[in-house]
Length: 398
Ligand SMILES: *Cc1c(COP(=O)(O)O)cnc(C)c1O
Image 1: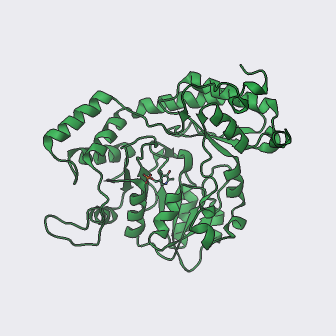
Image 2: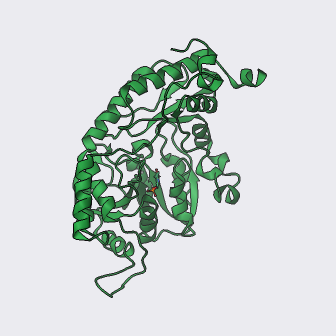
Image 3: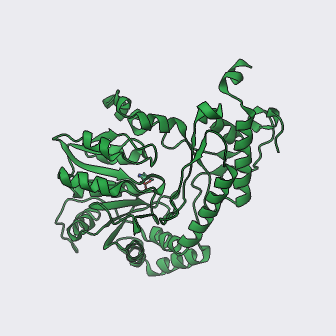
């Protein structure tokens, strides 16, 4: 396909893809079903406030996950904020820095200090032993993040939380449709939170949900997400507006109907990446445990530039020029973003694995917008870039 460097778009050649391939292009289910639902909604003139679609969506999600309660909300960030508040977290809460910034912001927004904990380089999730070492008298809770749909070490985190009388919750934004030891994620800790943002596996345009097996917590959060209203004219609690709209739930219901198909497409793409990228020295595809249920929503590479001799960042630039819009999630890490960078300028010293991962990780496009052929071509490009042994030293030297 490419014989010399000048054929790469980065060096002046034609891009290998006419159109940009994105990470997280939305999955769209059956369009006719969606439009029918939207028409029904217009006929009913019921657009929000726990309408028929929101109620149905909540039941479907709870059934699918085998969890007692599902509260649909307007986005994943509000979902996190609501649970944090309902659990009465305060002081310090331990979270990974290797996560989307919303996990940290949801705490800081309520003047709770996020304490960044390092991750296990094998699972990219909280290292439970490091968590324990960060507990202080001010610690009130732990938020684990199931990044890439990879479950946290739920068992050990639960033991640690119990032992120290801390609240435990999970940011499961990436993990809808994934399981831990045969049980769907959503069932662990006091509550778990999903995001149904457009880029996520199941989307409601914007949206999120809180799931819990705790009746009291369910009641409290239901009040909180609707200004504390308990029936007409009766406010019994401090609340906010976290409601999911009917059009979002219509999209959610339609997406759920296509869930198996989305998984199959993602899995097909994943297997194709696995084959296409096999045995490239320094390139590791983040593994998925086939024994668990998984959504295969993220194709995660780790680039060891000592072996590839091409840095992750140069690889990203070359791929972008070819119209493959690979992403560096969660570069540079929450602790290197404001306001945390100013609050904790030395946080990185305790986060060696996070610092390494943010330099190594690369996310590749998948989802229903990406064909198997696209995946094969992307793999070929990556293989050729690395085989070419371009490195930044040579580039700047030219
Ligand atoms: C997407 C995401 C969120 C935020 O969800 P929104 O619905 O965009 O508010 C929080 N945490 C993680 C890990 C996410 O990926």
